[in-house]
Amino acid sequence: MIYQLLITLTTVNILTVSAVEDWRSPQLKSFSSAQQDCAVYLLLSNETVQQYVISGYPDELSSLKLINCILVQIHAFDELTGIKDHVITNFFDQPGSCSEYVGRTQECLRTSVPKHCEGQPFERAYRSFQCYYRNYGSLLMDTVRFIPYEQVDRIKHLTESFSIVNTSCKALRELSVGQGFIVENIADPMYTLAVRSGFYDREHGLYLDRLYTQFGKPALLSDATRQCLVRVSQQYQTEPLRLTQLVLQCVESEISTQSLFTETARQVLASNSSYCNVCEQLPSCVTMTPGVTSAAVTTTSAPLSTSTRPPYPSI
Image (cartoon, rainbow, N blue to C red; front, side, top):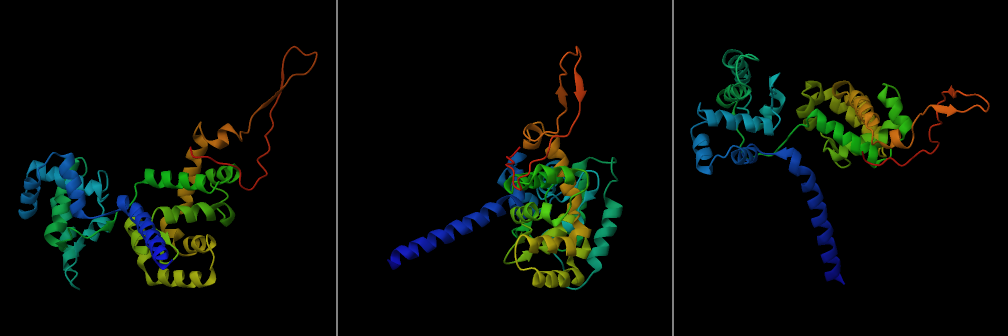
């Protein structure tokens, strides 16, 4: 009996770990793993890549393309805005308390990196990386870091969260026009979104470091924000209300989830395959009047569903 219990507990532990690792795989990544992926994409041999590493990533075309690929993989470079300081710095070990390395890095970026449209994106990515590589600190090759989401992925995750918790068509219509951003409408999808995307769990709370990597707002790491989280956590004990109040009271001004909810609801309602368009339309009603050769057309709004949880399948 004890043996069977141990087997059961071991199985549960394995399943729990597997679930965690399943989430981690796309959004937690090391520089070296991104480099390995890019070597495959760019048809570079292991020997070539290792030589680049030993040589400090020399100024050669394939080396430039390798660095560009890595920065794209870890979402640390944008072709329009350039290097994302709040992302790339996660992959460097800063040299103690000295802050001169920050100034040297910024000066290098100003003087060494071609302006937008003055050079190929991969060249700008490479020059930017070299500024950090030579000035900011030691490159952390194997340390796993959180990779920020692109906007299209954030919308996809919220769309699926709406579906998972059966958000009503009434709530979606209100959200789509910038209204209805109230706890009743947003608590369930917000909690699902935060857990699924790795920004929150019930034991740890909000991951402020990941939020900072995602949004780059220094206020997220401030003492005031941390104090707010402690206060609100003590005030609200149950989910999803606890997470929702943590977001609304402590970080909403920095991460603007309301705009994400509005844009996502608009896209859901714009889809021809969405439940709300197919099954809960607001149609025009055409009434034929007896004895009249032409149709008398009257337009009325169909009543919204009265159920609190209408079925809302994935779109």
